[in-house]
Amino acid sequence: MATLIKDTLTKEVNINITPDLVTRIHKFVVSYEMTGSNLNAFASPYLGMYQCLFTENTKNEFFELFDVDSGSFASHIVSKANSVFGVAMTELNPLMRKSMDIEKRDMMRAGFTALDMKKIIKTIPSINSNFKVVSDPFNLFTTYLVHCFSVSRLPEQQKYQAQTDILKLLQYKYFTSLVNHRFPYRPNEAVMQATFESLTDKFDIKKYGTWKLVMENRVADMLAKDSIHRKTIDTFVDDKAVLYFITDFQTRLRNQINIFVEEYMRIKELNDKFGSYSTVTTDAETGETAYADQETRLDTCIQKIYADCLSISRFLDDQAIRLTASMFSAVNNTQVRNMLIGFSEYAVKKIKENKKDETKVQNDSILYLGPYVLIANIIRQTYRYCSRNGVDISRPVEVIKTAKNVYSSSRVADPSIINIKMTMNELILKIQHSTRETTVSALKIALIIYIVIKSIREMK
Image (cartoon, rainbow, N blue to C red; front, top):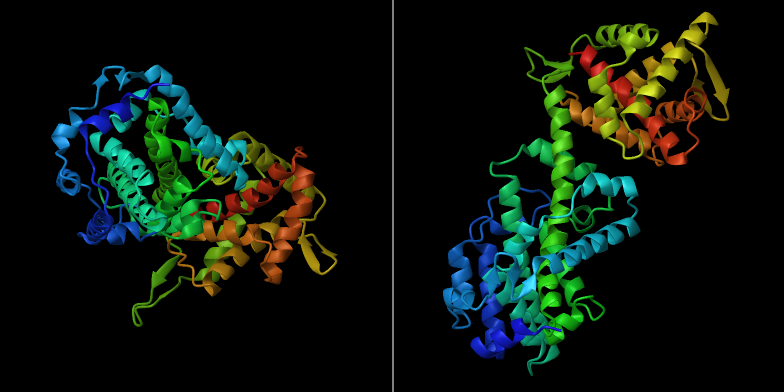
């Protein structure tokens, strides 16, 4: 078990651990949080909306708290092209994978499927990027400080306060670097808001509400008595374990940010595709937005989509299929396409039976089994629901997001929405062949979303 890191730092770096140092560290971290718009960025559920910086001057000022020169400290990091403190990067690679595996395991417990994880974390981080993390003087110094406080004679409360502040600062360094790399320019605020709203409580940012709380909870996890890094913090005796601690801390935060960025890009694509489409106009006298001949436009839209559904070639739209499938982790483009072909064939069959407006009463619901009456109700009731609930229907991405949320919810009491959901329960089983519950559930909503997307295009 190599101890070169501990041996080198113990010999070369002397830290005088005192209660006053705990106070100075805390004041430094609080002052950093209040610098510029840092606190706005950290105390936000969004990314890139406020500037947050972690400069070389910030690093140097932190080193000065301990009377340590950052350049001098950096000279003690024994690094070569393929090693840090003599630990080969090939040896570290399994640790990088372990960090990713732990993150996957934690997310799986929160309700993710294997398919979710494939979409969220596409590749293992490259060795080169992690080499930069583990060989960074500030990253190593702060990690060493956490150990120094752990073995100090200070009261446990003061130890924990100092360790928490130090690791928070390290998280802020990682956070600012990751966010500024992904959002060099200010992102679209509406898309950013829609991104946050689209997430479920499976995501840490939705669970805790701000990135500051996400980072603080991660610090608490790392410092917990049952933390996988507890032994490393207390002993600092295994070089590979020390480097793993540094990397694991950054990897987990990066994964959370990657999840958010991926969702942002997906919603931005939707917004870019449909952003120019509008279903409202402005009243010349009052200045208020109002539906422009809404009933006429809805009637025309319904007639067009109904006519299209009777021809597979006209009904299928590759772009709309891709957008629809991208909103569900349980289905792919092919499954959505096959479902739509099945619906088109079902519609033609009903027309031959003269049942385009067929309905059936089942318990307390009305099932819209005819293709025309189903399409008409999906379009009318979706826009009606959006209008009544203050959704800006001039923003198509909001209409699509609302449609997915309302038809997926088990707590909606609107009878018209319930009728459509009950119809989907029976219809999807007739037009597609999968018996997998997650696939069937996704396709029920996917058909609705596809029709809504088609309606937005027709009403542009």
